[in-house]
Length: 508
Image (tube, rainbow, N blue to C red; front, side):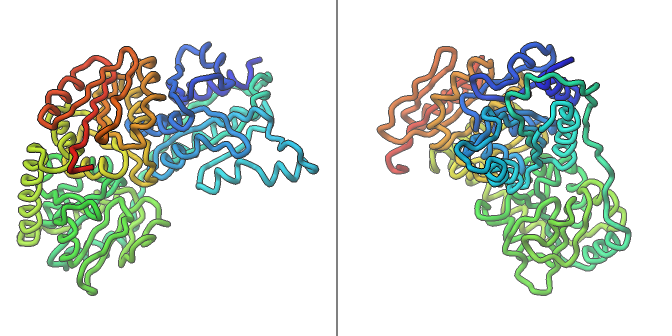
């Protein structure tokens, strides 16, 4: 009979998992994974980084990713990355190994204390699927249920297992593969008809697309062409909207250039597609808001809506498009599109001339030098702003980050996970101060795993130059004029590389 650990790894492999992310050190699954030909380790410097790496892996593939870490009383090192994956809607299966068997020390009533300190309660508080493996023969049932929950709900599942149980033997049977069912989900006919009526009666329609619009780029562009509607996007919707889109007016919200917000404010009908973004809304109280979202619980959750359509964006647009008549008045569209293009062109010129921040210059240069299918990963704050303004998506490029959770140091491990999934694809990360602080722990892991991630970071005046391990290219740039050559050298380097740009004194 196989051990519980062997059965776990077999079940992961049956569901297509080829990489397991974990921190350096023993996990309890080492012998099982080392003995399996189809599954390999991807090691990170910290457990938190391992969970973020799994999130990055799942983000670029759309497939189930896995991570392993220690879990115990007051030990939540994996939690930040798992919550990030949950909020970004990517499928991750985490194995939380409990070395102490879960019994709180010094408790007069161990059973009661165990219930009160049950880690599953903490995990479920973050809306994570969590189950404890309590009997060896339940291993395949628990792993299959966790994998199914992750891929169907596009979220995180956690299995908590005592380390001692991993070595026990079981007769659990043959592992079954788990893949997402991908059902067709669309609103009822009455709601589609009502949406077509609202859109048809409006004089000015504006569309805002979010992450839920992934895979529906062409349908969105056709909709915008039919309605003569400006097509704005959220931060997570950027990669799904930009590129081969003559109706693009940029991003809504605090990081916006302003034209997208104006387009929304002036509309008679605002169509929210795959997003429940909270936004100021149209100026007119008579204007209507229509929202398309797969989960009905999100309709009207963060802003009032006049009509909610529960369904996938793709299926809903396929049902809606034949009901719409083509418009010919382009005044609303032209005002937004022309203004946005002029503003964007001027902003790019300033950034390339180093007239904006150091991070802006780096992003603008990266946009020109990066490959057409590059994966960009950014930390929150200034790097996030630079990405929204200067990195251009084209349908092949990807842009990922801790956009919903807002973790300040997620870019580096997210990039490592993305690179592990696509070893031959260009992966570039813009790191903030927190991300820069963890380079010493994570750079050796990049080199050991053979992950040629390119890292761009901004140093403050007076900061020491980064020490990079052998095999990692390190370039320190003291003057913005040298940044272009440094970035070009880094992206051409056959291995991990770090470009460190010293911020100009007037920026500090």
